[in-house]
Amino acid sequence: MKVKTLVGNGIVAALYIAVSFFIQPFGFTNIQFRVSEMFNHLVVFNKKFIYGVLLGVFLTNLFLSPMRAYDLVFGFGQSIISLLITILVSRFIKNIWTRMIVNTIVFTITMFLIAIELHLAFQLPFLFTWLTTAIGEFVVMAIGAPIMYLLNQRIHFEKRV
Image (cartoon, rainbow, N blue to C red):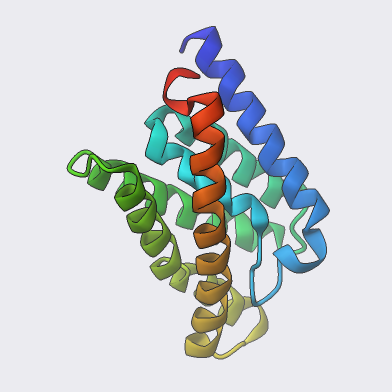
């Protein structure tokens, strides 16, 4: 891995952790309004950002999550699956906005894994929990898409790693 890629992904991981730290009170609930999830859109611009996003998710779940063991399995697993699906599908979609829409939908749908986690840990009703976590994820990803698009206009993510 090139030094440029390593440093870029390190910055992404650090930003993911920092944002997660500040929203910690409402980032680990049954609504899952985790603002740092907008960094998932980085793979739409450059698939190499998967390392930084996954490292950020892993370390956030390891050090900030009140349900560490569950989040390391379900939360990290949901991120891996969703990011890989987005990267795979992005091969066939050239339009950035369409990619971000697909990414948002993929992450929203795969929140069923987080609903399973919360059902196992707290016996929360699965379907209702899936609905609330999916809504939280959708809102964050939908709001994050234009933010990441505008940041890309200035930073050019595709050239950073």
